[in-house]
Image (cartoon, rainbow, N blue to C red; front, side, top):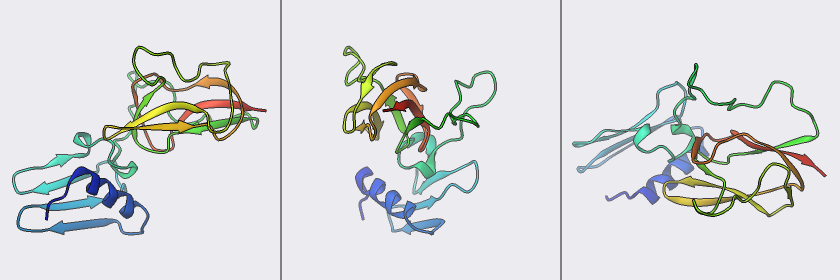
Length: 166
């Protein structure tokens, strides 16, 4: 049984939709164990000469995300503030990956603070496993805050931008 990364990603996504906490696949070539995030340390283990940690497959699925950084090295808050104005809509990351503000390094960003957006408009890209996933706005309004730096890793559900709806 050969298992490529696309199939692994589909397997992880399917597992994420169930109540199963751990899944192990075994065959003569390898053993694969997937565990949902129930503790700070998660990993994918391939026996038969290889052990791959979650850091080696950073964007397989939200359940394999590493915990956010703490202390002085931590960036601006990854979680929304305790009290957020009710008129602000948060655009959140639908997956674990890398946040990009523009379609290419030498191109201008999709949106900047102060820009007006409408539903369906691309506001950023989240790269996951070498796939570029365009994130589209679900509301219309004005971008009031961009919470993530370009090329920064993001977690599932992490707020990326705040929009004043109109």
